[in-house]
Image (cartoon, rainbow over all chains, first blue to last red):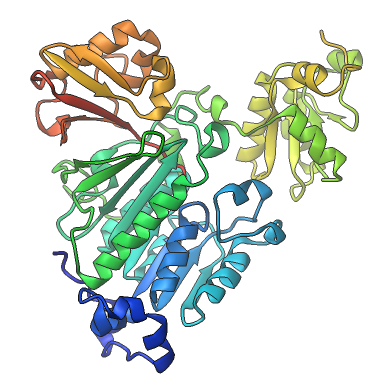
Length: 394
Length: 91
């Protein structure tokens, strides 16, 4: 059986009592001897931080709220996009364009108005992670990139906070519990991240919409077990979910004595994780991870009135051959000096002849702080074949 | 020795879409070499230029991480299962 966590509230005060409405609301929990009134009071006293209000964070937040976790913290800085709706159940169609934390607040409040929500509308960074995480009992890692995963791991190890991990790609999911007192951490499985671009994100490689529902729900389950001190958690095990073949299996995860975080403990402060994750690749690494937009999708979105800036990074003589209506010519070698001419608030689609130069341009724009920017997949050649046959191929 | 090698979906596309492959060898390294010989495009995703495992791809012989049981030199037995797990970050 897992030892129950000493929650922040429980450490300072007696666990809160349950109101009459709560006794009714949580009646199915109270019937479980493993939970009962004492366990429900532990849940009410607990503070859980969910990092990322996306695919994993959605089911985790909804189930933890419904279960009666007293305080839920949510960290996210993103805006709801229509492509999120295939899997991110905290957000609905009418929320497109709203901050994710706004729609999350509305949805969670509806699920259980007793839950106290603490919203952190920011990107988790090395500068703020320890301050944010310190006030919680448990962390749910629902992030979507390697840099933040290493950041969450290291912060949890440094602070001694259990890190309930989940990640997904296509039909595969992984879940575990890291950074418990004697348990391993994320670095014990993956000492270093893959080079940028080697492992595509869900945005590039796709993900079955229901998969984060499975894995995020597992994360919520583990968090509840940790709070209650019941059952056997995934500490020391990595659960592998294969949704395509309906297979669940777990493998052993051992604390690596050489792990700089939880083994040797030489890691004493947070690092620059963007740098950590980019150092492992060569100069050209990462180009295949550049966000892409399909020509047909771009055409539909522009036709529907979405204000997408279209930038052609080819050379002027190519521009003379043909162009996409509404595009602006900024040759790649001049892009760095033209950043002030590009609206940072509106989305940007970049194209070239076949997609290579536009990928380089998108990487440069991302490095300059642009967030919604895509390379047009296949360039103007594919546009000509699939959207506008009047544009000449060359 | 004959064993089964399980691939994550991110790598299965490099093995004609197969998630489970038969392999032979006396060590984990032999089995990995057998697989990469038959599916050469898998090689750069399974081993680095020195032929060693990457730090972001973990090999489990049955349920044990081979880094703690001899690495690619770990002996295999008939019927063993080698599970290859790649770091993914989607959320």
